[in-house]
Length: 243
Image (tube, rainbow, N blue to C red; front, side):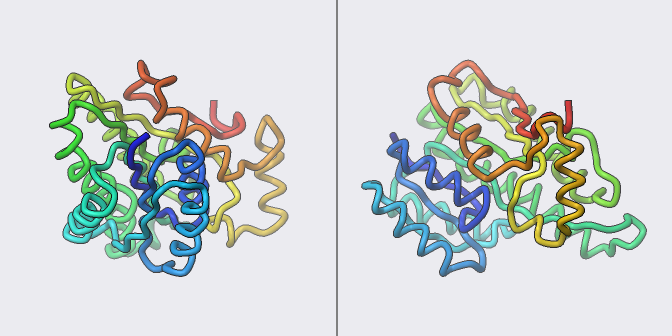
């Protein structure tokens, strides 16, 4: 099937994506920043499925580390056929309370990282006239969220980058899409109380909270030949919260 590189793959949505691609026969590069043990455990699980797997450390908000990561993946698994830009952070609070460093960290982690990884992946994809890039956005990048202005801005940037890049590289046979999750039970929900989660569930027309596999299934679909005529799109997987 080829090689997929997933950023922020040591847990949550990234981990679910890694396992889903492995089940489809892909070799998987598992990027992590600090969660080495999680990444290595995941690599062992992926390897048991009969494909190759590699844990590769990099802070993807750092351009130089991204370049080194791609060099490592190329050397161990070959060129990247599918890139999933999943790594990111969340930040909750009033805009007036955000410091310059808070803003800079959000943009670097959630938007600049996507740019760095796309640029590295495209160096091979353009020469082969093939490849798929899938960026993990957010429903708040589509409509904005109170007290999450920086996060909403970064994810809106991811959506804009996705659409523009799809136009730019489409003639070279490369597809670029985004998956926009709604409320999903990951570590980003750890600060929410049970009452908060119940309220979010009640706000969702399907009356449920998403699971990482819900997002992974959408990502794998967009990477497949079944989506060969889909590019520049935002696939919203949010249970109907944003329509």
